[in-house]
Image 1 (cartoon, rainbow, N blue to C red):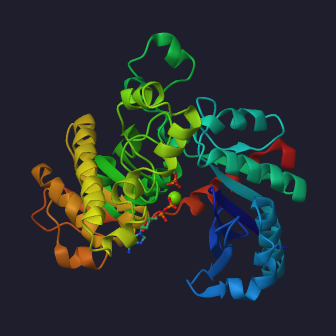
Image 2 (cartoon, rainbow, N blue to C red):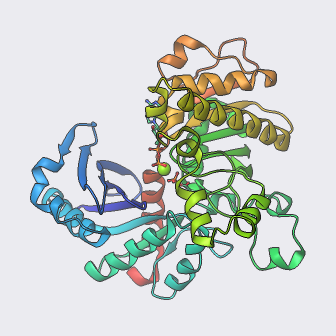
Length: 403
Ligand SMILES: Nc1ncnc2c1ncn2[C@@H]1O[C@H](COP(=O)(O)OP(=O)(O)O)[C@@H](O)[C@H]1O
Ligand SMILES: CC(=O)OP(=O)(O)O
Ligand SMILES: [Mg+2]
């Protein structure tokens, strides 16, 4: 019987998923469905596309079910129901999860056992927007589908081999020994880009490349020989660029001041920095870049300006870490779809020798730089789901638990 892999990327209010069929050789994978259950807890909305991008499932067809989605556990029941109805001959043989934080412990994907769950829970305070929901997803599936093997794939893993100097905060040594380090995130996306980079850049893929993963969460990664040498997110996914609702880099004294002088408690500060800042905080309108670009108000423009300005500054810092730059790659929601943001960030980096070809940039590339650009610029769609599916097949095939 042909087998299939389910990939799950859980956020605080959504579950993104993809289903892959595993070809006979157990190596090549073909995506058959990709979908999302959004608005969990308030206005559930379920959409699924097939591999051609055609919508094959929408909420209307699942009205009864979506009304029942009050929480993530309900969403998984609906998701499994849908998958069982649509897998045909195939059988679901494993589930791969994106887990945002793997700390110092996990530098490769792991087979999920009862023993590793407490370790994953330890990192919940470090990634409150992601980790609690991802761990809950693993536990819920273990209850609902106990026979299906699960694999955890970490966003931090790609950065674990950075030079130690890039991982250190200037804190007394005992703190780094306790794991207070710069971990970096979006590693599954960067790993995918690193894998496909030679298809686009040829030999230059092994040069000095900065990848800008600009989505609702946003970061940049400096790569040398397709390995991470520095990245903008650090201990948690709150650092670096301003994001949809996250503040990005901030002087830690601001936190001390808010708590000491303004009487804010830890929960209030955490809520402020994670959910009320970034593009939403500056604009007062939305944390969604597309909405801001379509809004005429000066507040929306100011939020976009700050995003571009910070991206330009981080780009300079990462180029310095690389000792120069050969190529710049844009990916994720904003990076893949917003020609105007790509163009504006490239303009900030004109001093590095980047020139954009406006006509090609408007059509999304893949190569968006002009012929006279000494640094090439690219738009490459990411595919975190494929990387997770590949890891899942590999881990499950090598696992003694699945012998
Ligand atoms: N055409 C577009 N123009 C500008 N921004 C866009 C466009 N399409 C998507 N985006 C932005 O991409 C972001 C979401 O990116 P995505 O990678 O899907 O985020 P995440 O996976 O972190 O939820 C949102 O800010 C959204 O507005
Ligand atoms: C790590 C992170 O910020 O992830 P996302 O962009 O999915 O929110
Ligand atoms: Mg994402």
